[in-house]
Length: 189
Ligand code: M6P
Ligand code: ZN
Image (cartoon, rainbow, N blue to C red; front, side, top):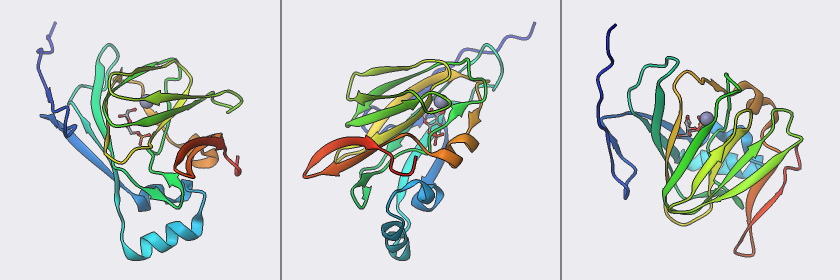
């Protein structure tokens, strides 16, 4: 039997950098269709295309038995009064759970059942370890003025299903109203 060799990666709690790792970047143009205020999105994109978040993955085989892990850095920002967030996804293997451990910043983790009938929102803060049970879609939102940085562990063969979220979005949205962070029903749901 060929053994996979143990290895370390190093996570910088301040910057979220994970080394060695493979980085993916998502800009506002990649997630523009999710934001509520279409006019505001257009206005921002006419001037610039801000980096919304980065994910840095440890290189692990996408095979049963392996645990994938990565850091995510969501930059602070809003479109209108709606905070920056990740695309969000279900796992192709619905029966797989995930854990998000927050290192820095303040966030909200929106989770929904596949049909969106159930929705829960957890706070993310340094030291919070959020459990995403099997079958729940998940999107994270930076509600603070600094980067939101968290470390994630999931089954390496879980897969990302974006198609469902692309069609429906999430049942809840996270907005700023009078300087407060509020969670509201998605009017387009
Ligand atoms: C977390 C994990 C990753 C995911 C990333 C960004 O780090 O859940 O698997 O890729 O968030 O989220 P998304 O893929 O929805 O853009
Ligand atoms: Zn996931």
